[in-house]
Picture 1 (tube, rainbow, N blue to C red):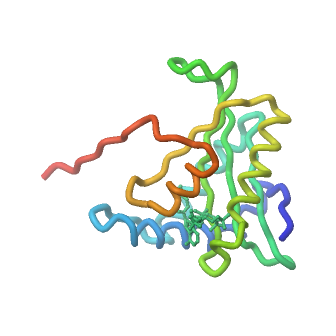
Picture 2 (picture 1 turned 90 degrees about the vertical axis):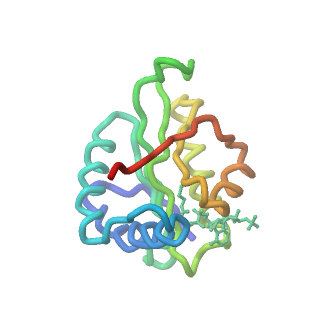
Length: 158
Ligand SMILES: CC(C)(COP(=O)(O)OP(=O)(O)OC[C@H]1O[C@@H](n2cnc3c(N)ncnc32)[C@H](O)[C@@H]1OP(=O)(O)O)[C@@H](O)C(=O)NCCC(=O)NCCS
């Protein structure tokens, strides 16, 4: 498995991995409505464009013989105003591994590569959002030293 930088111009190669993430979210959140891939991907693509335009932000692709296996997108922005993160902080905006490749270390290797890049940038604090019922992912992150610190509440009226 090779990990390399992914440029915005080639971001469409990760569309199937984004779709796999949507499907995974559908399976762990029966109470939330998940957008269809055709509705979701163009929106996500716009966000990737915005995030990757910020200095220091980056995307990584894990591939095997040219086949995309997983990817990570990290948005680097100004330091947080409440939490003393230093002058810059990182948000892991996406981490997805193809269903057939999960549990083989691809996600861990991607996060190692993310850490290496953040070390190079001198960014110490990384945040990410994970759905509370996505227990496998929570365990994966906790094993890597991440801890919950914020609860996001949601309701839909009517
Ligand atoms: C979460 C995810 C990125 C981890 O990548 P991975 O390559 O499967 O993980 P690794 O092989 O490096 O590490 C294995 C650990 O990942 C976690 N994991 C999460 N989903 C898993 C799956 N479907 N199969 C196997 N392991 C999984 C487990 O904690 C596992 O350790 P375990 O021995 O305690 O079960 C990947 O499984 C994935 O894309 N899941 C669906 C999308 C998702 O939840 N993304 C994160 C959104 S915040």
